[in-house]
Structure formats: structure tokens, C-alpha cells
Length: 190
Ligand code: 5GP
Image (tube, rainbow, N blue to C red; front, side, top):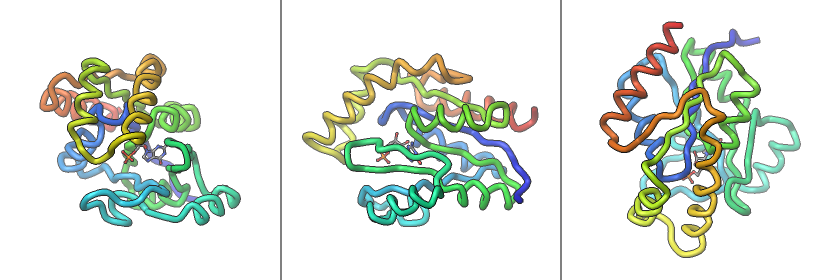
């Protein structure tokens, strides 16, 4: 059995800036290791299998659900699954590191309920839904129905903020990154 370590959960609606903040933390704090999720969506842009995600087929994903290999999983968008493999958390704890997650709001709360005080759950809050929609549209990686689905989900997810340990406002990315760094360093020391 692996010695259990700590976990840091970053959740937010898509487009709130959590991925950028998580990458910033990974570049600044060597004790952190990114939890690579499994997903059934295809790779975007220069994403790499085994680095950004484990890109797997829906059949493989469903098989792994049946085998209880996920600590949590969600059908984040209709027909598209995302999940955290138990082996991923164990891999990171075996390295003696702290796991950091970039995960949707439901998944984040699920992990927080499971790991309690071992986990720090941070909700990244965009300035407003309007700004979020602008950012999602400007990203240009999704279009049409997919984009609409992201807007609807984002609007719902904003209501979950108070359930997290901390709400981190992302009005200015540089400030949010610095605040995140302090929060995480303090948690690692505690
Ligand atoms: P994207 O397709 O933009 O990479 O991710 C879509 C959403 O799924 C984001 O909110 C992302 O944080 C979330 N996500 C990524 N990995 C996981 C996971 O393992 N579990 C859950 N529940 N959500 C995830």
C-alpha cells in the first residue's frame, strides 16, 4: 500500500483560467505532480497522450469503470468522459509528491469529500459569466454546439464556488497565479 500524501484540487468552469494557474504552479513548485486524467475526447492542438491526458476509447473507459479503476469520473459533456485513475494518484504519491488536479467542479468536490483534510480544494472564479463566455469564444478550440454546451455548464458551475475550501478570484491572471502559489505553499507546509 502506498503512503498517502496530499492533494491539491483546482476546479472551475472551463475558461476560468485554472489550467494556466496549474501550469504556473507546476513550474514553480517542484513537489507538485500533475494528475493526468483519462478522457474519451480527441486530443486538441499540441496536446500529447500521457502528458496532458491519457486519450482512450469510450470502450476502454467503460471497461475501466466496470473494473472500478477510477477514483472519480464524470460524463463532463454528453458522450465525453473524463476520470482520475486510482493508479495515477498512487504513481504520484510513490514519487513522494503532492498530486495537483485540473478537474471539473463535480469531480473536484467528489475528491474533496473523499480525501477531506488531506486535500485543498480551490475554486477559480472568473470575473463574470460574460468574461467567461468571451474567453471561451476567443479560445477558438470549440465551435457551435460544443461551445454552447460549455457555456451552459459554466453558468451552472459558478454556483458551486462556496462548497470549496477557497475561492480564488481570477480577474488578473498574474495576481491569481501569485495568490495560488502562496496558498499552495502554505498548505504544503501545514
Ligand atoms: P477540457 O476538454 O477543456 O480539457 O476539459 C473539460 C473539463 O473536464 C475541464 O473542466 C477539466 O478540468 C475537466 N476534467 C479534466 N480531467 C478530469 C477528470 O479526471 N475528472 C473530471 N471530473 N473532470 C475532468
